[in-house]
Amino acid sequence: MQFADAHSDLGILIHQVGTKLAQRDILELYFAQMKKAVVPLSIVQIGGDFGQEDLDYRDRGIVIKSMNEVGKEISVNQPDFEIVTEASNLGNTIKSNKHAVILSLEGSSSIDAEFKALDALHQQGLRCLALTHNSTNQFASGCEEKVDKGLTALGEQLLDYAKEKHLIIDLVHIGERSFWDVLDTTQLPVFVSHSNSKRICNHFRNLTDDQISAIAERDGLIALNFISEFIDTEKATLDGLIDHADLVIELTSIKNVALGPDFYAYFNADWEYVEDVDNPTELYRVSDKLSERGYSKREIEAICYENIFRFMKQYLR
Ligand SMILES: [Zn+2]
Image (cartoon, rainbow, N blue to C red):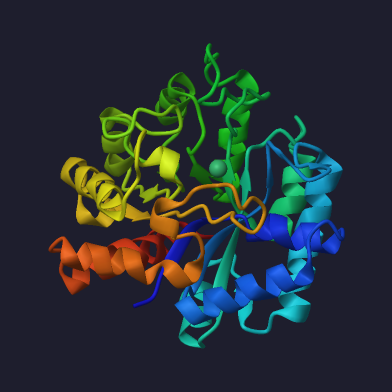
């Protein structure tokens, strides 16, 4: 079994190691875990609208530095990994037994109104973009805001820019009104990289049934998050995680669900993951549980890997 990870903070970890805020052995362990678990495809964040240690990734200069650091680390120190920017390279990279890394930004506060920073990031390989994190920025509102002001005029321009450059939009963390504004404004491919069902677990980070259905209507993906509080308000279990998969599939199809575990334990050991599935080497327990719950081998491969591969193969440019 192989896995694709729709949301990895590996890029932040690389940058933190580069700035000496994190230990290199933690990073090497994580790369080793990805190899051991067979994770040949990951969507990796270079920054976003949040702070980590002493660094604020809303700061343009820091995001540019993080992008440089990620590019350098992967090209110089990680011969088994490759940054992929085009669909044609994706299959070849994986066929040659390398791990494909697709770069993403989890919140766009660092982007200027002329999109010069975005030009630079795109040239360096950025291919996915979340408009917000949990808060409001110049483009849209996040899902934790009491009042969602919706997509701004500049947000509309950002979507035009994304269309021109073939950036893939990640609607994770966005507020509900802003979410619908984005879908009303653009026909761009969209996915949600690490969220679950609000009907099962009523958390502001999760998605309503209507949102899940609308993403699927765009042929998009909903990648499930493994952090306990997004699975169950009380005790999260692997069965509970599969309940989210069941519901997403019931509302959409087997082609629209994927995994976005949000592994982050290397930064914060206090974060609770479902039944301690907190790093790539534990992913097999999710595929085992899918099997136990009656999913066929083909369906498990679709959820664990093929759906993200196919989506990226279709839309990466
Ligand atoms: Zn996130």
